[in-house]
Length: 189
Length: 189
Image (cartoon, rainbow over all chains, first blue to last red):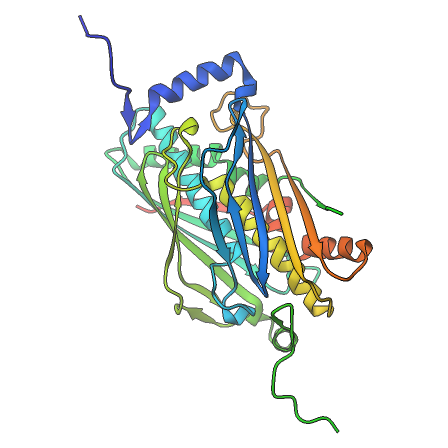
């Protein structure tokens, strides 16, 4: 007879017992799954500004427990800045990298697949004629983003490919970028 | 007779002389406008990973002059993490905030409009049933993002609204999110 389990099951550092009990709670009350994430921004000077992340809403309540974290953004001199931070389109790649990685590991963990390491690299093309208003034909945003993953795990390449497909299917940032999302922008008077 | 201008014209901390000479160079050779931005990512454990930004390509050459900057990403405990960093969907809002702000200030500067201050706030809705694969009907990415701007400048509200429309028209991150971009993801064997 097994003793009552006292510790939570961890796979790849992900508490899969908590994951599955969260899924059960959401099935009972879908409102638990509704999250609101937030940021604020303050312009400093020129191309330098500062983003801040603090509170969010989720699992039916406000979370104000985290201290604020600031993110400086600026352009390199060739783009009129002073390198006081990395630029916003680079932050977009960072966001994509974190989301694909976390989605891959979370879904691997849910399937019981042990991972030793995950590394990835990102490159995206932007033609500044869009930003500068020099051509209506050139997209203003990224024209294409290419991602390459290295996965260290005792599974076949086919299984690794499947993990990558799951990361793409379930990553919120990947899906926001590839499927688009509406953004409303208003002036506060 | 005016003396030869020795200093560059700065509006809102943006060197508009450099901006207009860059535009002239790009009109002569559009390849100068082609940029490639990059990031890498390394998984740490659980929902914790680390993005890194260093080099980029632009204005016909590689730029390796900047030191690497790391960005820790993690989830809060309610999302199975340990708050070792803010999460990827929050980084996406930070990216959007920096890009709209920089675009607004750059285009105001090009028009000679002096700005004293710009602040903005961002909120986006995510229903985790998408990420968790609990419903095919729920979008995996952001369902909607709402942005509010406060602009401190000696111009009318109509002019401020116009600045916001220009920020939306010319921001690469805003356009990537609202119009989508293709992302290819490959396994490196």
